[in-house]
Amino acid sequence: MKRQKATGDRAERELVSSDLIERCKDGDEQAWKELVEATHRDVYTLCLRILGNPADAQEATQDVFLKVWRNLSSFRGEAMFSTWLYRVASNTAISKHRKRKRQRVNESGVDDEVLAQIPSPGSVESAAGAKVEVERLEEALALLPEGLREAVVLRDVYGLNIAEIAAEQKISETAAKVRVHRGRKKLKEIMFPEKPGTETEERT
Amino acid sequence: MRCEEVQEALPAHVKDGSDSLTVRRHLARCPDCKAELARYESLMGGLRILQTTSVPVPPGLFDRLLEIPARSSRLDSARDHVVRHRKVYVGGGIAVALAGAAGAALWRSKVRHPATA
Ligand SMILES: [Zn+2]
Image 1 (tube, rainbow over the protein chains, first blue to last red):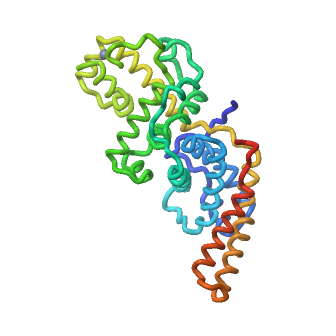
Image 2 (spheres, each protein chain N blue to C red; image 1 turned 120 degrees about the vertical axis):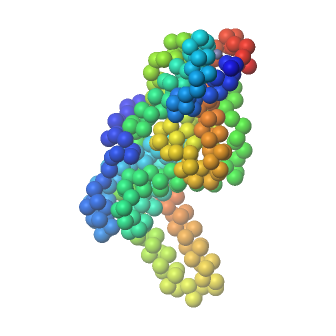
Image 3 (cartoon, rainbow over the protein chains, first blue to last red; image 1 turned 90 degrees about the horizontal axis):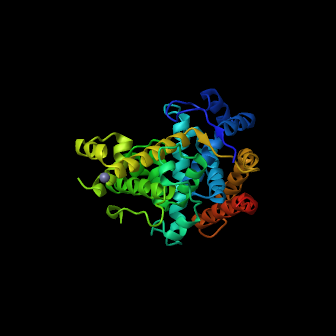
């Protein structure tokens, strides 16, 4: 899988100029093209990480840009555009989850069957300390239960704080903290599975 | 402090540097927990790296995003049409809601893309 390097830190970069945004507000389609070109990879990536599958992520990305197009006039420019865009994107992706969750039962966590699908890495000894592969990490994220995945992605990938995550997920800060913690543990289990038969007694 | 408790504290320990002396002392003499610490460190490091990488975008998505201004104004004018003629319909609110739903359905039908699922 080929990966592109994005332009830097979320908090420190501005993907599009205010001039470009003004032109988009005026309905300039060339400006819209430039804005989409500059931002759609990051938006799709965020949606994919939160939703865990490409079909939903594509749908969410289109919803995000539709919202952007429709609400651009209300964007005043006192917030950074990329911050606003990320907020619209995580909102859209998370509410897609919530909508779908009503139809499904999926909160039990990562079971052994799911873990078994993951290609086993080398020994834990060699894997630990080595750099984790980003592709494997994306795959592992996709296997987390939705609530935990959202929390870990927002906290540890995009750097939101607990209060912001609680607001996004519409849960208490305590609950958000628990989700982040449980998500990290699950993710660690997926990335570094215990070899059968080598469990130590204190880790039962 | 038992290994279980130490390992429970490790994710936050790695992320926020919430450093407790007991944890550090335990780590200094417990290879198991030290190995666990290394796993969390590479995990958290990996997650941080994800922030600056993006995944490949499915073909066709970019073009569909470019169509949004045109499609959006078409949906808007369909909705405006219903709003303008709401008195003709029985129950304007319902008519508007239906127009919205129809618009959304139209949108979806073009959006879906089984080939990339
Ligand atoms: Zn220990």
